[in-house]
Length: 273
View: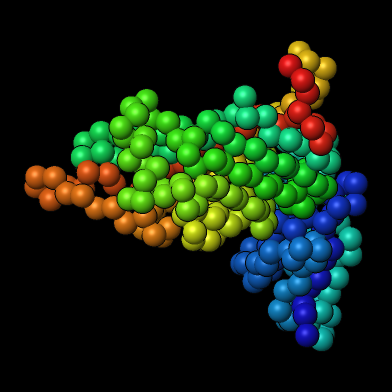
């Protein structure tokens, strides 16, 4: 049996699945704290009968406080509560499909070299589709990278990275990412979860996603900008090259930082520039 219940929605009626309900008694002692489910529903464990203060919070929204009455059977209801955007909230891009523009996007991977420096590798060929949802947590992303397009500025090194020691691009030509969920962390940032298929291995990854805004472009379209970061362990993807140099330091580190700067164009196709 549940205790204090609430249904949390945006002003437009969408579920706020990242909302949190905090319940305190009249002395200010916290007695319950629960997160909303995917439908915006909240429910605590049964509580002792009495009067409580219930506070609803969610990133990007103004907090709401309510007085709650819990009956002798330990239950109570706050009903439907609609949250208003906070003063510093950002305007989301219009809902619907968006296409990643590879000419104005970049994917950069950075790994340690010899334990003292960094190597940056850029993937120049990528494509993908974003569907912006309402609420934002219902959005989805699918992206593909041509593994052979890796470019560090040195041909010999690029050829080695394409070889069986690393990406093995002849066998695994494409790196793909498909989102599985998204959780808001602040007014303009989210955690984007998904599955990364790299070098024949599929692993769950979380990206720190920041939204930069949207607006018209010079070609008559509408663009949205995003920046995302994550850290991968290449051993998780069966990339186990471990050539050593003096003092036992690996030539290439096992941790790889990945940074994505993405521009997406509203619609199903890219404009002809």
